[in-house]
View 1 (tube, rainbow, N blue to C red):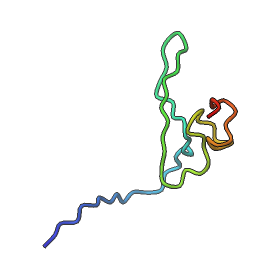
View 2: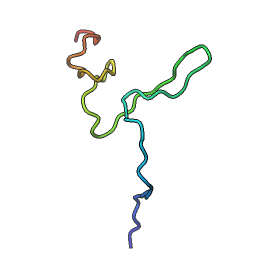
View 3: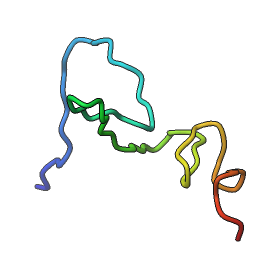
View 4: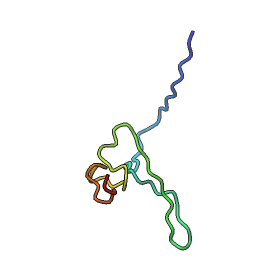
Length: 66
């Protein structure tokens, strides 16, 4: 018999913040903000170069000319 390798959590629905591509991790006393970029299966449109969610990398004005 093969074991099920998936995990399930049964808990009440909690109101979480909406996912965003840039996730703030923390900050320092001088105001420096640490963050990382997250991705997921159905993230939608975002630029792999500048990480804005308004366009894709092909339309990025900050990307150097090829």
